[in-house]
Image (cartoon, rainbow, N blue to C red; front, side, top):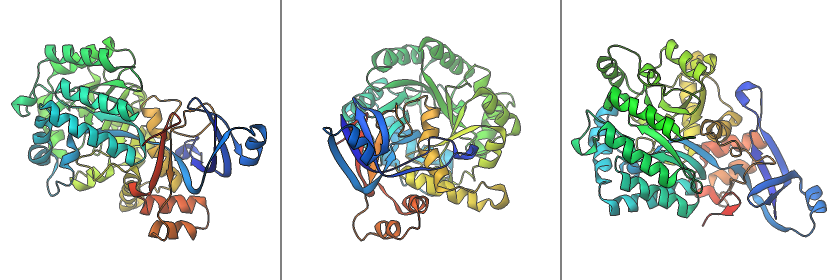
Length: 425
């Protein structure tokens, strides 16, 4: 067993429903076989376990590992393609990179960069849009396994309106997806997600195949995009006889508790009700929405309907892997909406980046640092004299310090990351 000593901050209770920030200063977390078996004042935990190794983390703060609910593995080298709306950005920046995944050596190099980028940002679990090529998805799962990340991902499926080399058929999609799931689903910390790119690039036949895959892979998640861009939404309506975007998935039985749909910037009330009743989650990707000019996320309406929301980085339209940055941008987004926005505290931001994502990804023992949970954690320790270090030193309380971490923090301030008690190197 190992006894960690430090300041631990998490959100075991949803702040949107009356919960708050839990802060334990000079506390002890006792970890055995990757699981937290005791939490309390350090003196008390130490007295009960005098012989255990102590890891002193008092020169920083310990947060749960971040949980990213929407990020694209093939697009890490496309980050920073500014100045275009969604569909033009896809054609100019993202889809050429997606096509390069056909080269397995290229894909392997990207996979290594991708998983290291996530880990360095304090992200320990992620729902990842894979690639359009099965061999490339293999490289992602292999790279994640070597680092130790909790990755849920899958083959990206499209059968229309994309570059020809990115298209497949429903029959081939089923066979390749199932083979990938048989190789990786439930192996180590890997899980499978059925992943149509979006309804714009999928026929009803392909979406029906996605339903068949969900039936064939117990415990799989379903993820795609929804209501990101107004031109995209209009095209989807034209292709599907005028129906709303969420219904394109729902009529194939693809919207339920295992569903995570990214963006939802422009939902109808009918769609929000459908998402709430089904238990699906929306992955809010604020830097991507801002960079592409997609719009301001209507968090208030989502909360009013009871739709679950978590954070996603959406690399490569998003501007980096750090959920600290996404949390800050989520705060800005709500401030810009005035009376229509939902004011966010530091507790809200931490919840959206951790426990909300764990709930979305059905990881019940991840997302906060409670007894019975995996020790998935990160140590934030800014450089001495840095603006963040100065800001934390002069914060009036821990919540104000956390707000300053979201405002000024970067991956450079993440000094250590543990997954299941294993220190990542």
